[in-house]
Image (cartoon, rainbow, N blue to C red; front, top):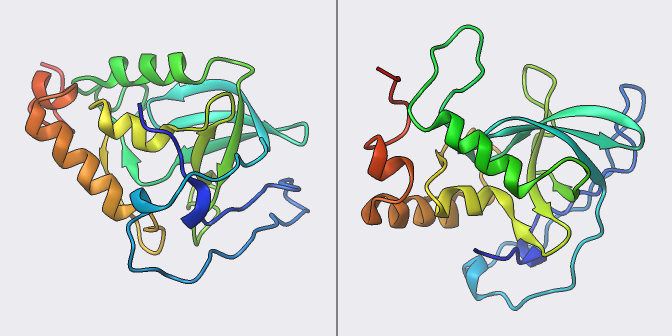
Length: 188
């Protein structure tokens, strides 16, 4: 498992996330030529949310300041397992089950935002760090073969390490790469 190194994070701590209250963010440090993997470990970011439930492999419901919010994990895409308008895909149930083991109900997490805080469906868009051990959940899903990379500009802060993790998992035939041959494969 890969632990999260928060130095080059677009560290945004959710202070208030109701429709009437803005999300407070911190700006990232200036861009650096060094890859995030070369940055020494830093102190953990404090949790700013609690997992209410896992929806599927790349979406959770989190409680932030007493309010439930649907959160879409940034930079990744997992096979469909609950979409009403799309068929289930190979490894979708496994991806959802794995995320549920990583983030059981009541888990404290830190949500970290990139450039855009919400998508067209009004879901929060976030990188997720499990507070108990600083596990960078989005990256772990890629490394373990439960997700593929999906970048929507301008939310691309971790594109390079995410693509490297995906290449490594695909080359090793890990998870969906070994079972399905890749993401977006319908169940037959």
